[in-house]
Length: 487
Image (tube, rainbow, N blue to C red; front, top):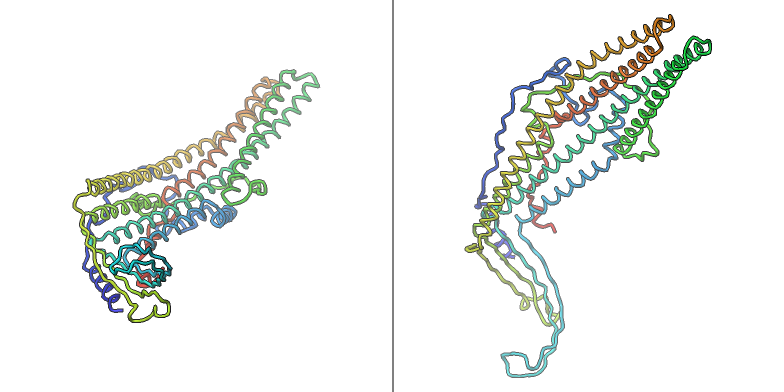
């Protein structure tokens, strides 16, 4: 139809000539340090070294951990929910793009009505009237985006879409890091269990020695009671360590989408060291942290909302047209005499709104300023977390070295105490003290190794886990001509 072609042509021309009011988005500057303050306790990673994209945990070279991580990616319900939120944001962005196209509808209807004989009328015959009415109207309306209201709305929706995508990657990073941390904590408890079990064996031998000497009248009942007390206390510690391990096993079950009652992790004591972690420079965090990317995309959203609020001050042009057929008889409904049509336009210019538009604009500007502060806070938090990881690993590395020496010293002290006791030089209290000191130092050495591995995991998380912002750039909806004929 000519009127349809005319309406669409005018609307498209107006759209092409329109401009988008409001500020153009630019990422605000953030001052990043040139280098990290703390140096790691490992060799510097070579330029070719990098975290595996999408599978950063492979840097630890643990096949069992790799398997659990893959289970998490397939079955974790929090990750499924994050993917659903992304799908929702993608659909809502398509909804926002619909405003750029004409809206057409058809409303066929039929009715039969009886009109009063006393109704207002032009002719003088005053009698009741009963008649049928059949309509097939087609309606078309279009609001050219003269000042960018719909384009800014789509820009805001795309920013939200990308922020949601970054959120999903952040959920992925948080969950996989939590799984790795729980896994290494469990393995540390396996090693700690082994240490306590060895101490139980040593103390049982000591108890047997004291019992034999007590039977022979050489050792006192006090020596026997002290050794039995130490052994009972160590057995209690073993139960507590095993209870802690069970909790981590249950956490791993939940993260991997398994029921805790039907899930178990084979015992395998921790025997590894933290790998070298490629850090890059601090400014890399602006592109490598998904939570920072979320904060940055939230700024883009708020900036676009300022544009939408600004467009409310400008005129809104609505073009409309309708056509179709109307008749009192269905037999001649589709005929030239039954044809109806209408063309029109409406130009709305806000004049007095009680300050509503001005207040909305002020609110969106304030929201944008808030998003800038949140973005800068996210960046500072990222710097802090990396420095925390580096300083933590540095301190733990030094502590591990000295603690390993302490374990060696404790073993030597226990041997000396045993020899002196058997030789009758000292009381059995020295042996009790040496056994207790050895257990404490061996457990601490094991705990320090576990803390090193967990801190390494969180350092990988702090630098983004191999992610970069380019992974969300393609997450955006662009208007397509096919939408003009879609429902």
